[in-house]
Figure 1 (cartoon, rainbow, N blue to C red):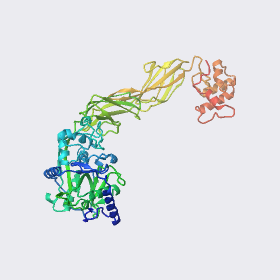
Figure 2 (cartoon, one colour):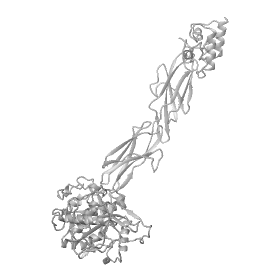
Figure 3 (tube, rainbow, N blue to C red):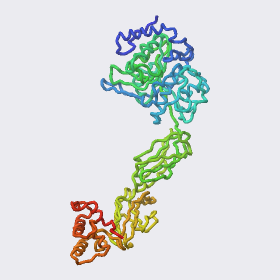
Length: 634
């Protein structure tokens, strides 16, 4: 039975016991008759979890010719890190993927998953477009476009690059029917069923070889590692293909994947060196770590989904490896990357329309997507109380809009009586565009603490506080009935003040008042408050008098106290109206208690001092009686 090469331990830093267990697992796998199906030329084979590539000799030589003819990547690399001065690079954040869904299943297209990963990372690094691209697109369309069979193995330079040179576009995974569906290798998804809108234009694409072999002018393994680091330092993910010499070696790699954790490092050259070539596999190199000079490694992303201990679908390869290891007459390892130029669609054109339904704290923003640039767009609004970028607030993006569609957004928590600036925005794969700025003015809130008080037979005093956002206040008055609106009745006040007096009124009459707030802006129409403040007052005279106004002059003063005292001394007679107004304690008599009551009222007219709180009187009742707003009779 064949055994593994003795050139080194397969798993770095594992114990000898773990080595024996791994070897035993490999032997047991060999004993299972169905563990690896019989090879078919040019296809990936193996269990559903562990497919591999097994090209025939003619196909393999074509792959090698494509590899050898590829241009070399220009490398600019740093010197080997001194102990404790190493670094790390991680390109995985540039890749939009779901580990459990990154599984090729039975399909022999590991090369396409790794190739597409290079393209996805390049698109995010170069164009700031973070998008998951379709694997199904190349799997379904390569046969009608390039003539290569579905799920049947492939190579970066030989299969992937020619396909995208021919199509000139890559397709998002989220397009209709573009999600991965061929895990069973059924190849049942027609190319015509995959939606190619939206898409990203590929202006040019080429494969680049990262020099690692002595035949490529690389003097040693450290230089090879430096060249790979240089590619990753430039933000280029690397397509990495490797071959193993025997079934036993492949089983050992399967065991490593299935039973080890993501932080375990494998000595891949110990697995991949031999005098023959059995099968191969392609994965995506997304980073490295050389911070620990005793444990330097490459980070690889597989296309076998997840495994126990591998929640992210990753594994590590020892950086200190033999980059010239060989399987038979050819090299075991191939490191390549992409040189791709994307041509995004033109950015969209969007216009901003005037705001609608503007209230004190809410408004509706409006816009129209004039030109979508050939792609579905996301649209939103930016707004603020001051003009110009950056805007303080923005609405949520609305997705899936196409040319000619209008869109709206309702905003709230605005400030009353405030000028707001806003603009519509639209974005597609080609960029983000903004419409012209529009402005609107929110409505103010109505005046607060609005009150009307008669101050005599022909005048009413009015006072208020400005409503939120108000610049001016308009007060309208009307006799006997409230004004129906800002045009009804007569004008009492229009200005910035907070009080006024309505004069030349009819004695003994009831007047109603309404007050509105107005917000002004030099460049915009004024905005009136929706609601108004209201109050009324009854002027004195014609038989309508105030309690305590004994001399019927429209006021409650010490002169009224003198009138009561003169009445009690027999020096003055009262008519019926005077008798009513002098009886402040409502006991149907006019006594010195009424004079005292008026004096107490004068000392504490609003009751704040509590002077009327005497055992002889009901303070609330008597205070109400002395309220100048209460008429004492008609």
